[in-house]
Length: 80
Length: 80
Image (tube, rainbow over all chains, first blue to last red; front, side):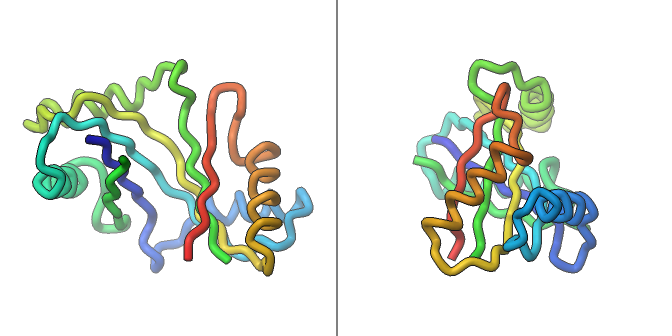
């Protein structure tokens, strides 16, 4: 099974990297860009049979290692 | 419109960061993890009406700034 974890800064946390990318895009002529937020994506290849159980395990991984839940939020998605 | 760009290293390129995360997960007891690849996610808030046109513009952003196409590949996804 493959799972994807998307970790982004919480909306209340300032994202200077995103601001910088947004400004760079603007200076390249992409004026339609209103807001940019940067995050991490972690693609996991898992040896698991039960998708529901595997998802719970991945959430556990996020809490323990992959995300800093003080400032970051995460989403777990299954990839087919 | 909101769009999401996922940038990952090409499969042929070694991902030491992913290897390190995979090893760390293993040492935390998550032995079902076979492979980990890390990437970036860029969430864009766009001032665009035509989704098809906007997607083309985002692909242009990737080629020009967001991804290093020598070693990275990208996917553009629309978020509702």
